[in-house]
Image (cartoon, one colour):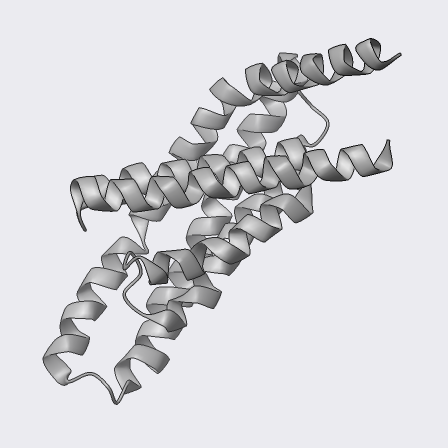
Length: 203
């Protein structure tokens, strides 16, 4: 039974990671580096992070939160590799909040209240981590002293990064949370029902 649960955990985590990668890649191709692309991609990434956390546990969400920034750099969605730790921490912030507040709740009034608290808290915390980490630390201490870039490049990147990692992050975190509220109860019940049917068939 333990081995079967481990296989299910790995399978679900891998599937959600794959969806996260696919969302970033195909939306990048379809919309390019635009605000529309950022809103759609960011919302879907947050959705998959939260789903992984609530369906598979903290370490599933943590794994995706840590891997996603590396993929973003690899496909050109993230302009600088030193953004990776800051984005990973922002992802981890919303993962931790939903794991702490919403775990083991599937539907009903209790789920709605827990989700509302987690959505607001998680979105604000992720926004705060990214805003402070990226616009105050990365921009002022890392990007400003990057010897590989000239002054006009630094100025242009500073403007774009300061905008991209401010209020759009709050919007995409909350949209991802709303999508979770709509999708998670149905998906969780479907997975639970399929598992129960498999167990009955084996018995």
